[in-house]
Image (cartoon, rainbow, N blue to C red):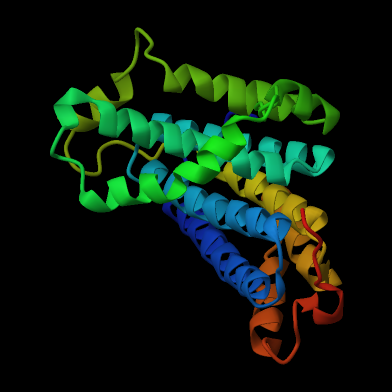
Length: 276
């Protein structure tokens, strides 16, 4: 993560087009999951890709609007998902993770519905949902152990991504929590004439594209579906683009879109999933 000058309008457009191409690629991958993915493992992998892609698009949008701080906050969230997905693959913890998520959401709703200030304000549908989910909540909550979130720094080290943790997750945490100089850039932008303030450094956008490429690859790796080599070629080419500017990944996604759905991005015969 090196410092660089403010990007030109041309570089900003190049990054936008890269993210748009990535979005198209992700759409084909997600349609493949929807068509052939079976079981919880595939659902989690699919959803992480979708959330990551939306997050990457949001990072570009807030960066382009001049809010680098907000872009770093979103970057931290994106990196958190990559590290969580690796941990789930390492531990095969998809079932425990789903139960943890169910319990957390149920308990949050319970607090909301139990709050005196919310009496009579919560929609009836929410109460009905809680009533419907209560038997499962009681069953899961009786288990001796509950899923715990990973120590993401340790996961990053096992992935040889300590630098991403230090300069992405850890660095971005300074933007999540209030600091004395918060708002300096916002102050300048708000009192300046339109167009007078240059775009901030594009490092956060480039790093987010990198992290999203790694998140998608992690999802493909943990999936029990057998993915075609071209799906991985695209991700490799995105990373080459970030280093050299080579636009080959645009050509690859064009090939994918032109051939799909006659040419499947995964092997349908190898898409069965177990109970994970």
